[in-house]
Image (cartoon, rainbow, N blue to C red; front, side, top):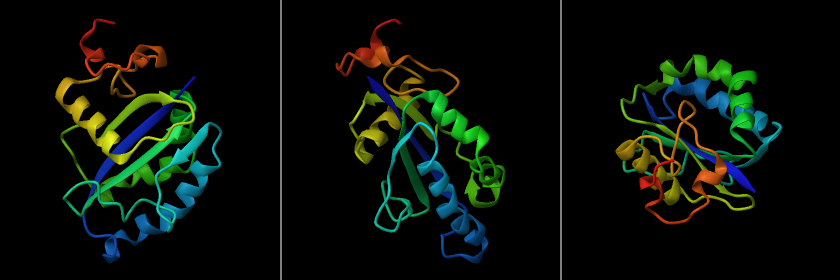
Length: 160
């Protein structure tokens, strides 16, 4: 059995302590609480403070990471489209700069495992370099969990 891991990165328009980011910061707790209780939610990256805003996965201090694990693509999609998360997403341009490269990737992991930040970064870089493959994909171009069951690094080279 597999679960869906997701990484998304966001380039903030200002540091989190800037007054223009107050509504974003205020929305973090309730949005995370909503995810934690959502049907199909498994895990999310967080520190003892309850969010991942202090985790620096990249050199740029304005680049935030968000990682989570879900039972399925459908569970994550349902959370994104049917929860209060959508209200926050509608305002994202107030707080987040446009990123021309891929900033979200999905991949399958064995149920019960937790992805690392380094693994997630590698999956994002793979998506940016090769486009959607069973190794790292998007909502628009998905792959079944069984497609990534083979562990070889070159699995994405094989035709589907």
